[in-house]
Amino acid sequence: MNIAHWLLDAAQRWPTRPALFEGTRQVADYQGFAARVRARALELRQVHGIAPGQRVALLMKNSCGYLELLYAIWWSGAVAVPINSKLHALEAAWIAGNAGARLIYTDHGAVFDGLPGDCRELAAPTQDAAVAGDQLQAPHPCLDADLAWLFYTSGTTGRSKGVMLSHGNLVAMSLCYPLDVDPVAADDAVVYAAPMSHGAGLYNFIHVRCGARHVVPESRGFQAEELFELAQALGQVSLFAAPTMVKRMVEQARHQGYAGEGIKTIVYGGGPMYLADLAQALDTFGPRLVQIYGQGECPMTITALSRERIADRSQADWPSIAASVGRAQSCVEVRVLDAAGQPLAPGQAGEIAVRGAAVMQGYWANPQASAATLVDGWLRTGDIGCLDAQGYLTLTDRSKDVIISGGSNIYPREVEEVLMQHPEVFEACVVGEADAEWGESVVAFVVPRSPASLDAQVLNQWFLARMASFKKPKKYLFCAELPKNSYGKILKTRLRQWLQDPTEPLA
Image (cartoon, rainbow, N blue to C red; front, side, top):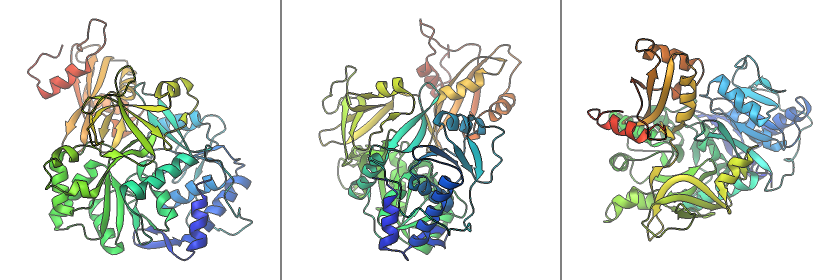
């Protein structure tokens, strides 16, 4: 089934129900939402020649038009390739080329000097574009296994991989939400404060299915004070937020004496939530928090920790439960495996594996990576954790070196690749350092070719010309050599230890 049928169904059931909002201003009801989508789909087909199965990329900030374009892509039978709007143009162009995208929509056009293949850049259509015409009355027929969303994530190699999510994957993920995360009602309002190209955007489906409201802040991003104003004006507001966003919300709420009025649910995930921060959030907002754990390869849908379990601090086991990421969601099984791929007993740490209807189809045009990650029907997540006797999963480490800063994944290898291109850099190694505001920050250890040849300003300028600014190292540490083992491999554990205790010798 084409997941765009959910929008058609909502428009037929509740044509005048409010659908799209920019701030507190209603942009469209469900009938208008579907009409705009049909018009965009017709334009994709007739004007731009997009055929079913072809890829259309989006490099845009959050907007109601973003949601319209997503559904237009699916309505036409094409595949959406949402790209993080924070990425550098060179990174986004590589993704568009790897996906074989025919079109890439940007907010205003003129982002790219050139694009690979026959990909063309288009400025996103305005909200006021005409919607009349010989419209496609129903979404293009699709099977559950047909590709819908090509989500680009990065791995330890530093090169992006396209996670293939089918219509069936998206349906399974969405149906888990009301069962395991939060029931959805018609008067709910989902606010897109985090990027729609990632987890926040994935939560649109179940809210379309239930005929709820979709709200994009006027800032098109996250501002705690603006979010509180929206919650009080609209009511029944839900949102997805990284732990660092939750922490900022708590700080702003305490500053202005706000106690969560109008907020229904804050779903948090994408990084560690420290117990002290969680306790402060509960003290500030009350029982409004739900935790999820997922990956792009099993989007938003590995485990969940309910609001009731999070809020009940009277139980003796609350610290351990609150430090966990909850229990398996309805459409998946979760195991913890040893090095041989065998299940471990409760309490033993190993690699987390997941199997079920939400797990990806594989990596786009990358059978080797697919085979290494999907083993005997199980997704090997690369995360390390343990299950307790009740089925609660606790993450203990990440076998991949991903740095999660402000809810965004930053992969050390891709940062190292850019630094190593500088002619005066002899060696570079990137690790994450605990950061009270961002969760983690990027630290680059750099060995220059000559002692006086580099400084942080030079490397910042070099980096910003080649990669997104949010991936930029917050700190550069220049050293004569990096610690290595007998095989010449750089010891990142030693670097992390040194950050905690600089009195110890580095090499």
